[in-house]
Image (spheres, rainbow, N blue to C red):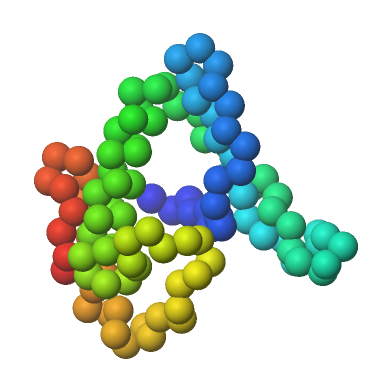
Amino acid sequence: MSDELYVDGIGDVAITGMVIRFDLVALDRSQRDDQNRPQPVVRQQVVMPIDGFLRAVQTFGKTLTKLEEVGIIRKNQTPGSAAPVDPAEVAEKVLDYSGLETGLTAK
């Protein structure tokens, strides 16, 4: 796979019938608010059926659990409150996302 897209998060979410659409957003340094903070701009939209969305939620849940287990994040941590992470400390905690069939494993 050669196409990669960096995003800072998810923006708007819309549900139409059995389809969910959500915007992937990234902070844009050229667009700032009145307090000079970069503003999120839509980079791409994901469109998926509800069953695919539920599988994605399950995968993200497993990923969140693994991040907690290896100490990269804390349970109930609020977005933006993480202390800077030392790359040397995390180097051996890199995660291998092998999908729902085999689950998550730490390398």
